[in-house]
Amino acid sequence: MASSVSKESLEVSLEPAPLADEREWHGVKSVRNLSQIIPQITLERGSFANVTEEGLRKELEAPSTPSQPISTTEPNEPDQKNPAPIAGFSEIEEQLTKDRAEVVRLLSLAQNEAAVSLDFISLLISSVKPAAGTTSMSPHLRSHVPVGSLGADRVKATSFKEDYDVCLGWKIHAVSAAVERLKLAGERLAAVNLRERKYWLQVRDLAVSGEVLSKIRTADYRGLGVRYGFADAGSNYKEKGVATLRSSEDGKIVLKTEGDKRTKVLSVSVNRKISDEFRITGKHATKIEYDTSEFQNEIKQARDLLFEEELFFEVARETRLLVSQGIIFDFGDRVAVPVDSTCKICIEMVELNDNVDAMDVDALADDSLAEAINAALHLLLSKLHKKTLKQRRSIPLPLGSRMSSNTSKSDILEPLVHALAVDPIKDGIASLLSELIASAREGT
Image (cartoon, rainbow, N blue to C red; front, side, top):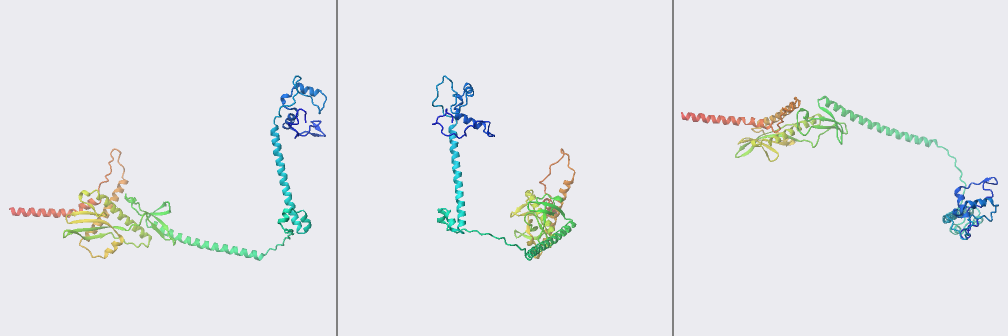
């Protein structure tokens, strides 16, 4: 250690003593870098502020005496008995403390591992030589574990002989299971094939019969559908009449229409005043009789019921336009068309089953009139469809001459009212003429 460093500031140097020849010593070159050399110079020489060029030159020219190095201070400066504190010494001391603690920790860990290994070997030896094992055993292990409680033996590998019968049994079991699965899959595929064949044969028959088929894409169904409505025939009804053709478990086509299934038909009744009150003297409801076990008949029935519903919808719509002529809603769901003061026609929707049960009732006097009015209403709706379809197909007029469509015109009830008013008018005219002739004869 250099004399410029006091004993109170530093007692031990962590760096090795400088070699006689810094470049090579016994053929071994120094591998110290600048970060190692600068701290050593700081410990030996002090701060670089005290190093001068003149002092270094004098030290190089003077004979080498390591025990008494030449002072590098100026001649006029007094000797510093208590030099300034060495820069970076506190960091070196702190690092030295951390390294020492790490070394102590590793030594303690190695000692513990060695002690555990020694106890393990001693306990293992105590099963063969108790005296030798007990000698090197720790007191803690000797007091808690019985001597000779741990033993060791050589395990001989048993010879393995493959049993081909077991292998053959497992192979047969696997093949049998595969055969059963393939058999079940074949049966299921045959059933699906039969169901699909039956379904598509019915679809073919439906297409041959003239029904319009189309693809249906909804949230819960993707497949074929049939159009049974009258949208292509000129109908403006909100219900377009499209049903899906679903397949049942046995392959039969199941027809599913939009919304609830329709079960009502149009009924016309003739009411005449008898004893100051109106009584039914004739009644007729549309007859729809199909064997619904066949899906073709089910489509026809759905088409007819849709026509009945649209007919009553048009009648109810035109009723609001002809209120001035006395046509009103009677009891909320029945249209009353007055003919004269003693007769009125009532139009309503009745259940299909009720209509079948009413067929056994005795005939009334005006049943033929009610049936004729019912047929006339159906023909007038067909005429309205034809008129609408003709308007759709006609060439549109120029923009300047185009006239607004008259949606307030009545095409069903108004012709019916005019036709029913013919006989009362004829009777009134005949009565008036009879009275005029009688009065003329009396005057002559």
